[in-house]
Amino acid sequence: LAKTTQPISMDSYEGQEVNITCSHNNIATNDYITWYQQFPSQGPRFIIQGYKTKVTNEVASLFIPADRKSSTLSLPRVSLSDTAVYYCLVGSNSNSGYALNFGKGTSLLVTP
Amino acid sequence: DGGITQSPKYLFRKEGQNVTLSCEQNLNHDAMYWYRQDPGQGLRLIYYSQIVNDFQKGDIAEGYSVSREKKESFPLTVTSAQKNPTAFYLCASRSSGTVIEAFFGQGTRLTVV
Image (tube, rainbow over all chains, first blue to last red; front, side, top):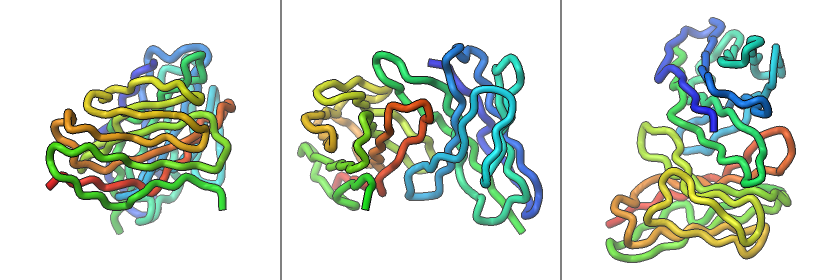
């Protein structure tokens, strides 16, 4: 399974764009990159998934360079309610299933 | 209402006792997962199951056991062999499709007294 590395924490002010980068140097050809968001005392929630280039939805954008060894989750104009932990996962379905290892994530604090 | 249900929400256990946490889903998902989360920490994978009657150990399986007799159910037993069981436990499920979107239950907070 591909190992991921993210910053432990980040701070931002309301209204700013936040970019969280995840490194995954040993990503496999079939692996997808998936990001989740977790609020305290709740389970994580799926945000976005991509394989290459750029993916955008109503919540965030995901940028993946051509070598796919890293990815960047972009949150436009964050608000206080975006304060949460963000997890980057890398993997794919396989014969034995997909282990969904979340790691420690990046704790984002948004302040006024 | 489709979803994944964990029970109970809070659970207290005496040292030396086994306790079983329930996880049920009606999403028709193939895969199910159990995680442990300690304060200020990320999620650590305990066990996961891709199909009925099959499951694999995660990173911290020691002191835990699971069963998958039905597609809808994936109970987790915290045994007396688990040295530090006080934690927040999360169950999740997902389909086998390409989108790796897992759905989580509300969690069970286990406290050993």
